[in-house]
Length: 120
Image (cartoon, rainbow, N blue to C red; front, side):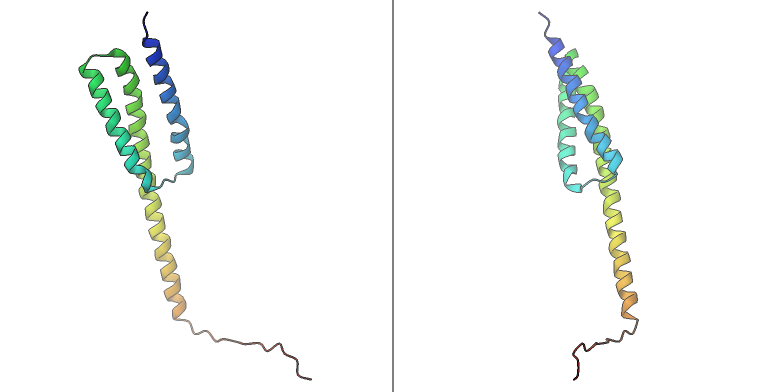
């Protein structure tokens, strides 16, 4: 019995697993840097697995790992881009906040104290 249909089913399910992540990254346009090392390890692992399947000429594994490597590549690129973009925005916001604080230091503010006690 040919059991390659099991690998093809697994390939389809793995591919489908990437779609929500790719959609969420695109829609939110936000990513944290702490997920990047995980994506790099997954990418390298998939690359080794695809290399193994090519060297052993295992058609089922090649069909499995090729789309997964494609999804890993897109996912890693998106994660790097959005992590960088988020980092730049945080730095810009911090600089703007620091500039606002330094501008406020130049102003002379007087403190006004209201006495709410009644004099009878």
